[in-house]
Image: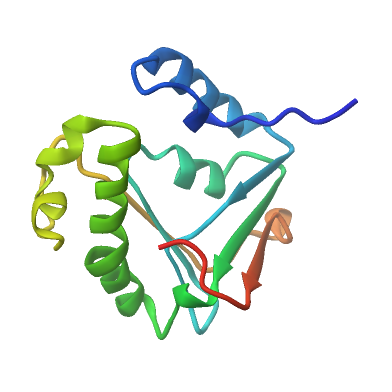
Length: 154
């Protein structure tokens, strides 16, 4: 039997209930393949999410998490990771979401200006920030990081 792939982003934005169901279903997957916004030199993973489904499932959900990051996401420390998200990833990703998912996001300050202003807009994509710096003994080996020797994503 082939494994099924759960991809909430394959659902049209207007089908919100179906997309939400798939996002919740991903918590029960055997494997979650995910990215991160940054990884520090001492091995901390930082991810920022608007909806929370990606970061929540990374923390606690699927039996195995494979986090794939490109070398462009390696930063010195947590402060640099947060700076990377706000100065680069958030404005670019918010603009991308306007084009492919939700035109309502066009009013976000970071979309209009290209710079994060730590807004409180209802459609902001920076609602949930996680920093993973370790795991409890019973969860050791659950999160696996694959660093690809080229630039991947934003």
